[in-house]
Amino acid sequence: MKLAVIGTGYVGLVSGVCFSDLGNDVTCVDKVNEKITMLRQGEVPIYEPGLKELIKKNTDAGRLQFTTDLSSAVKEAEIIILAVGTPSLPNGEANLTYIMEAAKEIALAVDGKKIIMTKSTVPVGTNEKIENLVRKHTAHPVAIASVPEFLREGSAIRDTLGPDRIVIGTENEAAQKKLIELHQPLTENILLTDVRSAEMIKYASNAFLATKISFINEIANICEKVGADVTRVAEGMGYDKRIGSSFLRAGIGYGGSCFPKDTQALIQIAGHVDYDFKLLKSVVEVNHDQRFNVIRKLETILGDLSGKTIAIWGLAFKPETDDVRDAPAFEIISSLLQRGALVKAYDPIATENFKKNLLHLDVTYCQTAEEAALHADALCVLTEWKEFQETSLTDIQSWLKTPNLIDGRNIYSEEQLAKTEFVYYSVGRPNMNNGVREQTPLLSF
Ligand SMILES: NC(=O)c1ccc[n+]([C@@H]2O[C@H](COP(=O)([O-])OP(=O)(O)OC[C@H]3O[C@@H](n4cnc5c(N)ncnc54)[C@H](O)[C@@H]3O)[C@@H](O)[C@H]2O)c1
Ligand SMILES: O=c1ccn([C@@H]2O[C@H](COP(=O)(O)OP(=O)(O)O[C@H]3O[C@H](CO)[C@@H](O)[C@H](O)[C@H]3O)[C@@H](O)[C@H]2O)c(=O)[nH]1
Image (cartoon, rainbow, N blue to C red):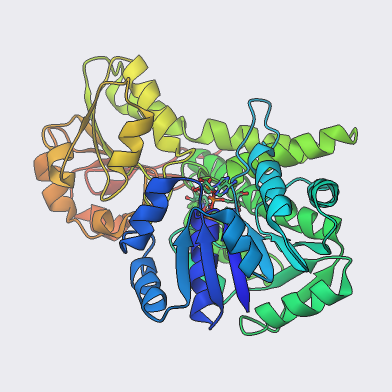
């Protein structure tokens, strides 16, 4: 099939490349010239394991092109995939400017029968708005479908080529048939539904996953007070098939380009129809507060943080990505600086992206993990990069001025700590001091 993909962010680029890998003829479009120039030269604007190689394979095979010329790409395609951004407005609502602009450009370019398949995450009712807008600008038969994307950054290719399910929301039977044909090589688990339900499935899925994370983070906070271990609690819960073991890793809260924005957007969607989504509001509040536990723990160990040197390992919102959108590291570092601490930070690949967003703040960015930790009063691990897990605790202890370690992602085990002198605070697990578990007093009730 001939496809045009509008937008070469994570979703557009990865879906375009994967669809071409399945034998389709794909043209990826972006309005940013530099991105297209990079892609044509074989460079990838995002860090995603395996993507560069897959782009090369498919461009070499002549199935994958990159252009800024939306009009020509649309004219040649049977299916147009809308994958532009839908960032948050200041009030939390999704900003639909890019979607609507792209839809209008597509409508002005169509010269025959087309399907517009929206992969961007859009509020319920948006695809109908897209349809109305398209109808205003063209008389050609254009079918609209909502086919939300569920890929995760860092494992985007695997998620796209082996999805748990594909959701196709359209009222147009011919378009439905064509989209089933397009997606069938990926999975047999294809849910056919109406447009509004498809749009809602995406928000409900992200909101539910965010809820699981905030839930386990609150359980972790209670575990710290009662002397239980949240990793064992999550393991015990996860064996129950009704609960499942995924998304029960306690930490410093979720970040990234999706959960923070989509939870806020769903609260707004509900608000527009006079529904107060109390549960999701609490999920967001719990998530925001969770990151500051790192500061509270540092203050418990060091007291006043003014003049103290704090090493930060990890700036990306999760490992295997250089994406720093809504990364908890921003607020943690800002808060440390406000308290007068000196911050030395290291991330294997996200430093440049982070710097661009925190230009005005006085952070020392380091080239290695060791350089960041050297002579610091404490080390905070904010992203669970493999590199950090593989660094010996003995080495870390020798680098630090004082062996204080806040593990925001629970990457070190009690066995590893047993042979060290760390004062070690993690999330929802007993503190360690000089290789020994700190005892929680008998509970009074
Ligand atoms: N990032 C993810 O992991 C992920 C996963 C699932 C769903 N989503 C959703 O998918 C959508 C895209 O997300 P993203 O992270 O890939 O976005 P992004 O903002 O990183 O990239 C969007 C791209 O679209 C381009 N663009 C905007 N308007 C255009 C136009 N008129 N013509 C051509 N190009 C245009 C921009 O230049 C940009 O390169 C969002 O709605 C997001 O919520 C994202
Ligand atoms: O048990 C867990 C799992 C995740 N996280 C955090 O949650 C955030 C999001 O992680 P993840 O879901 O792996 O990454 P994303 O790439 O943001 O993917 C989410 O957002 C995408 C955009 O909508 C969806 O397509 C995906 O299905 C959905 O998982 C990160 O900060 C993680 O550190 C936790 O704290 N604990």
